[in-house]
Structure formats: structure tokens, C-alpha cells
Image (cartoon, rainbow, N blue to C red; front, side, top):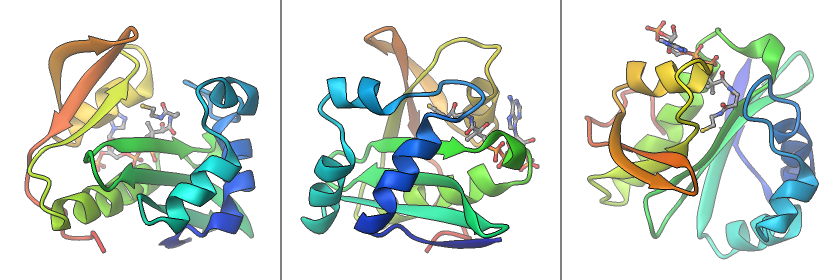
Length: 153
Ligand SMILES: CC(C)(COP(=O)(O)OP(=O)(O)OC[C@H]1O[C@@H](n2cnc3c(N)ncnc32)[C@H](O)[C@@H]1OP(=O)(O)O)[C@@H](O)C(=O)NCCC(=O)NCCS
């Protein structure tokens, strides 16, 4: 298992992975509807606006996460089903949170599925995130104001 920084040429594989999560899956076409494509993300990465990390295991990419430099938003975190529950999601989250905090963001935020039965709901709370009570498009806004993760790059 190896975590490394995401490169623009990884993005097509990451979009394919995002469609394969057990819960909260998002397909390539659905994301394109929001204007989010491998090409737009690669361009944002090359402009240094977004940055991410991915995990490789058993010869392929099994999870990834990224954040937005200007806003302090955690943009995405996704694991393949067979690799959930091994601490990789938390490790990827820590990399993004650590990077955003190193930029001076005291508050890191994200939007998440408010359904308490999905894994992400308990995961973020377990990792020290809190719901603000605000909803954006039916998704709940969560924030993290905690200490910088030790494992972060
Ligand atoms: C949510 C997700 C990223 C979690 O990744 P993961 O690799 O399975 O989580 P981890 O194994 O790193 O869990 C880290 C910690 O959170 C805890 N945890 C995870 N889910 C939990 C839950 N629902 N309730 C309480 N604790 C939970 C784990 O027990 C672990 O605790 P520990 O560090 O004390 O041992 C993963 O399930 C996923 O990709 N889901 C589908 C996509 C998705 O929903 N992404 C988020 C969109 S907003």
C-alpha cells in the first residue's frame, strides 16, 4: 500500500473509481453535468488550484482524495469497496486536511450525504468533523477545525 500525490494523468482512472464506490457513487456523466471532467480537473491541478493524494495497492489505484487551495474545501474522498475499513480513507483525508491547514485554513469544510446510514456519515464524525446545520443542494456542510494530522504531508 502506497500513498502518493496525484498527477494530472491519473485523473481518468480516478473518475472511473469515483463511479465504483459502494455508496455515494458519482458517474463520469453526472460529474460532467456539474462541469467537472478529467480535463477540467487536470487544468485546475496544473494551475495549482487543487491538489490530491491517491493510494495504490495490489497494482492499482484503490482510493483518492483532493482539496481546493483557495476555499479550503475537501473536494472528494473515495475508496473502492474492497479497500474500505483499512485506515486508507483516514490516511488520505489527513493528507488533504494537513495540506489545507498548512496553507492557513483554520476551517476545512466539505459537503456530504446527510443520510446517517452511510459509512461516510459516521466516518467524518469519528474523524472529528462536525455538521454546521447548513445544507447545500440537500447535502450537509461539515467542517473540521481540529489539530493538524500528524501523518499529513
Ligand atoms: C467514507 C470512506 C472514505 C471511509 O474510508 P475507509 O477507508 O473505509 O475508512 P477508514 O478505514 O480509514 O476509517 C477511519 C476510522 O473511521 C472509523 N469509521 C469509519 N466509518 C465509520 C462509521 N460509519 N462510524 C463510526 N466510525 C467509522 C473507522 O472505524 C476508523 O476508526 P479508527 O481510526 O479509530 O480505527 C469510504 O467508506 C468511502 O469511500 N465511501 C464511499 C464514498 C464516499 O461516501 N465518500 C465520501 C463522500 S462525501
